Image 1 (tube, one colour):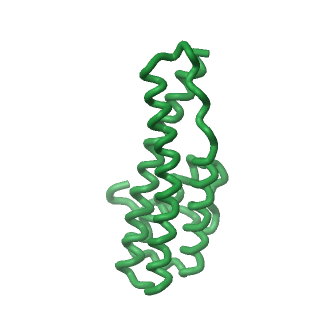
Image 2 (cartoon, helix red, strand yellow):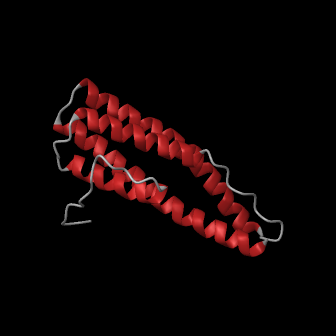
Length: 141
């Protein structure tokens, strides 16, 4: 993303979770660059992202098959821990939004956008590990 502004339709978040994470990161990137989104739209976007993160993170991760070994079980423990952490992170995103709502200026919007970008990147990495876990667990069934 360095050097170019990702183009998105800020009014049309994707339905699929991974695509939504990418869309949200691009939205937050533009917040950091002080895109003049109306506060109502910022609020709706943050609430939508919070709901999507919460919905995904409440889905339990399948148990590790008995034959899978310690490494895969350890990965599962990390993923389960991530789910709890990301629920808290979605709440923290709401806190940053409340700061913008109290005093809407560029610095607060940039802080919200930066936190959103960091959260999106962390979720993207988590999802890569989650897909790896699910593929390995399926092979060990």
